[in-house]
Image (cartoon, rainbow, N blue to C red; front, side, top):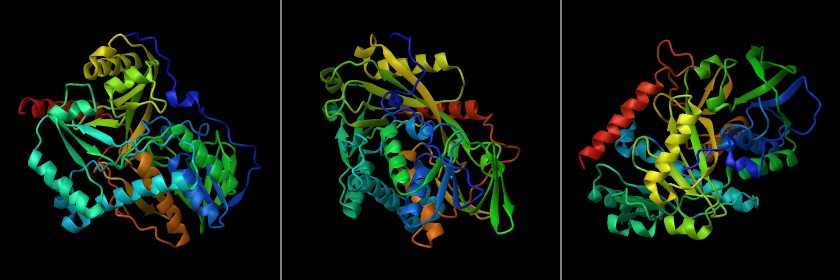
Length: 427
């Protein structure tokens, strides 16, 4: 494979990051949102349409963060298994996590349709390729329960039927979910920005918040542009939380998530590799996710890493793509980019309030669905409406001596790699 790639996000080729439109700085605002990704824009749009005066501060350009760097797969995953959730919360509450995931995916699809959002939304479904140990009986039983509850039919795909979805021989079977699809994340973000501006939201890009503190009944935010008071604050910085928010920073683990995009190989060739053009994931702890580009001309693949060696990471992803699809070994990669996703220590998203600041956060790599959903919930909390979520007020804990620098990530990655190897060796 040719390794001469560009370190620029593929999604930015059509919708690059932009500066916010000119606006006069304000000394006092009703609602301040820090962070202009899916979370912040969702909250702002909900509040502005309810008649509130809303300002968003973005440290970089609009569309420069994780919301436009991801795979654009509308999974809304919960990383903990149903058994893990039942052990921690009991059967009744455990079920509510799945309930809310279904609602959040439906809400995103409805938002795209109702607002006529142009973001290349493709409800083509997603397959998780099964690798290692799994129980066919358990999968079929869980699928039947899911269908009975939600009228959505997950399909167990036998190994000899996987060729209907992928030419890869890596998988021992799969699970097809018809309620998951793909979007162009940068288009979605810029469409949300357009809607927010139309609703009266004021945006400031390249505005770094240096400190947030109480000022009697208000909040005082110190920034590189000056200071501003706000009645309400929503923190929507997630994995990009810096030292201005030390309490949150100590409770989130930023993890590098990166992707590559092949050169154009043509729709026919893509379809020969992925016949139904579905989104795809793997059942491993450190599995890859991949998909056709929205125009069907390329394949995009992503994964996680724990080090900062960009070239090594690129070669690793290229090798992974060639392992999945050996016929792509000679295909060039046009783009390689990375972003950060945030994991709380218990690997569950959060919607918490501390000292009056609302934190929708910790989306565990599934922010395409959860960021928008929980941003909206945060706004509803301010409006005194239905802001309750299964993620509301879950404890957002830290560990001793952790300040936001995940020094332990290489050890954690080795642990998950070992688990994947052990699972594969005991098939």
